[in-house]
Amino acid sequence: MKTILLKLTIGLGIMVLAAQQVSAQNCAPREDVIKRLAKTYGETRRGIGIARQGAVMEVFASDRTGSWTIVVTLPEGVTCLIASGQSFEVLAEALPPNA
Image (cartoon, rainbow, N blue to C red; front, top):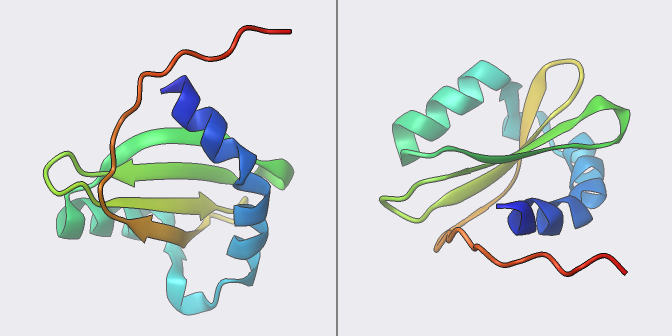
């Protein structure tokens, strides 16, 4: 799980910038987005990370269907869909030792 979060945070800055550019049709109050992901796709939260300026990135996925969604919630409380796809897998790779 740490590996997944590490890989996701590498691109988090780019995603946060993208979230700020996303049109209003891809953003909604967080509660509405989470309910829709659960009801429509069976997705639950699998990872979380904190970005600059107080934004929160979350990864949601479904074990049943393999679908996944990345969302970013801005400090104002609006949540934007950043990316989605299929074939989600949890990896248990060891992190490299500190140099």
